[in-house]
Image (tube, chains in turn cyan, brown):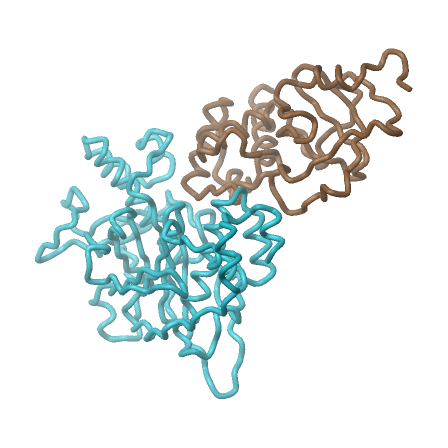
Length: 318
Length: 183
C-alpha cells in the first residue's frame, strides 16, 4: 500500500503509520437476514473516519478493478468516498452470510441495464442468501440498502442541497405534470425546494429499484404522489388513515403500480432518504403491509449502531 | 547553440499563455500528450507554441487519472534541438480523439461543470474528464445539461443527454446542435 503514500492520495499522519502495524480486520458481527417485508439500511458518515489505517483495510477488500475505479476519481475526497462505498457494500453483504463469506470474496456483475448485483458462487453444502442491494451516496453519507430477494432502490440527498436552476424549471423539464402541479401549490420557496428534493429522491429510488437507472426510465413518464388525492403536502405526521406513497404511469393514471412500495424519511438529521422495494406478493399479507425498515449507522470494523427507533431515523412516510 | 530568431528559454517562459502557471512543469487544463509521447503542443489564447518535452525518469506518466495533474515534464537544454514558435493552424491537433469541438467550447463546458460541481479552480478538468469521476450525480448531470443549454442557446433531447459521459462528449454535442441551429 505504500505506493498510495507516494502518490499522496490518502490523508496520512506519519505517526499513525509508524505505530500501527497493518492489523487484520476484526470480524464483522453477523446480522439476521431481512424478512420479506424489510429493507435493512447501513450507512457510513465519511467524516467519522479519522483513522487513516482503516482506509488501507478497506482498500484490501476491493477487487483490482474496483481499486482502479476508486483511483480514477478526481481528487482525494471523491476517492475516499468511492472507497467507502465499495467497502460498505462488501462488508454489509458479508454480515448476512453467517461468517461464511468474507467481504473480499464477493463478486459483482451488472444486469443488462447496468445495475450492479451480486454474482453468487455455487457452494456444495450451503446456499448463500439471495440478497439484493443498492447504494447511494453524497459527499457526507453513503447508504446501502439490502433485501432478501426483492428488488430495491435507495437514494439519499442532503437536506440542504440547493439547485442552480429554478425549481419549477427543473420540474417542468423532468417531472410529470401532476408533480409539477403539486410543486406549484407550495408558495414558500424553501418548502418547494425541500419537496422537490424529496420527490427527486423518491423518483431516483424507484428507477434504481427497477434496475434501469435514470437513463432507462425517464422521470417524465411516471408520477409519484400520495394516494389521498386531496392531500396537499407530504408531511411527517401519521394520521389514522395515513396517505401512502404510490407510483403510476403518466399514460395510465389511476392504475397504481402496486408492485412497488416506498418509504421516505430523514436520516441522521442531514439527509432525505427514499427507499423503493418490490412488494413480496408471495406472502399473502404482502399486499397490505407497508415497508419495514431497520437502520444501522456503521464504520465497518470499528463500530455498528442500530438506530432504527432513534432520532436518527425520523419523519417516516410510507 | 541556438538558431537565430529562436528566443531563449527565458523568453519562451515569459511568452507562455497566461493560464499556464506555475512554470513549465505543470500542464494547462486543455492538454493531452499525443500518442507517440514525443511531441506535445500547448495552445492558448495568446500564442501557439510547439515544444519537445522529454519525460524525465522521475515523473512517470500515470494512467487512469482523468486529470493530468500527476504528469510532469521538463524541457532539457542539452541536446534540445530548437524551439519554434508556430502559428496555430500549423500545429498538430492537441486532442487525440476524433472529437472536433473547438477548444473554447471545451473550455466553456469545463467552466460550467466546475461551477455546478463546486470544484476548486485548480481542480484539473479537461475534455477527457468523466462526469462520474468528477462526482456528478444524476441531479448534477441534469443541471449541467440545463446550464449548457442556457449558455449555448440550444436544446438537448433526453436521448442525446444520456449519451454524454465526458466533457468532450458534451462539447461535441453542443457544437453539433449549434451548427444545426444556424444552418
